[in-house]
Length: 235
Image (cartoon, rainbow, N blue to C red; front, side, top):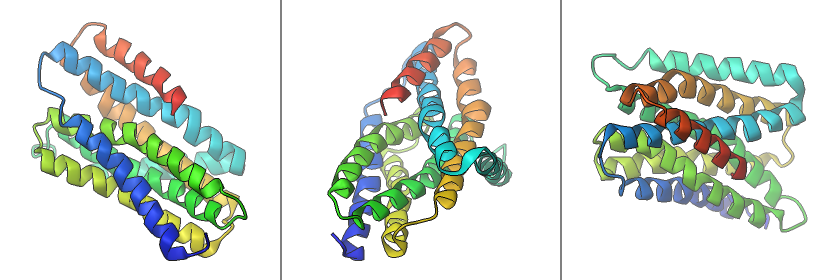
């Protein structure tokens, strides 16, 4: 497949269908006891931590080395710090703020995924279809994890679906760029990956894990973090 338009459409579908399905799954989460919500949010934080540790940062290191990886992490953290300053503390509940910041970081993370999809379709093989299917499956739990804090903040199902779809949108943009430019610089992709990793790492440590602990003082959130971290190994 060499059509840039077709590749871009596949990229948009992979991103938006994947995260959108995750958002739909979150609609069935009910507000119950704080203990249950604590472990659920812990799983969310642990899963995203697993994605950062086992996928984004190792891939970044392999493509660009340690200093490009560090550069991306610092830039990603600075971006979220900048965005965080735009959220008035008295307007956004902690969980709502976490969900919105996580949606931004996953959107950033989806750009290098789209770049990989677009580039793979320009090769003389079927790797593009295989990678697209893998990315779609990978995006589903990510959509779920960003949607859970929104659901716990009583955001309407329609808004949750819209936010998860928008978070998947950058995959299509990345796919277009990847297909248009063909073989992209490994250094550029490395910085993109660690950029997304740095953004996620800040949100996990600053928002998700503290909020999980705040919901319940017991061990449930810690158990949830460990469960989510293990789940991150499989995606």
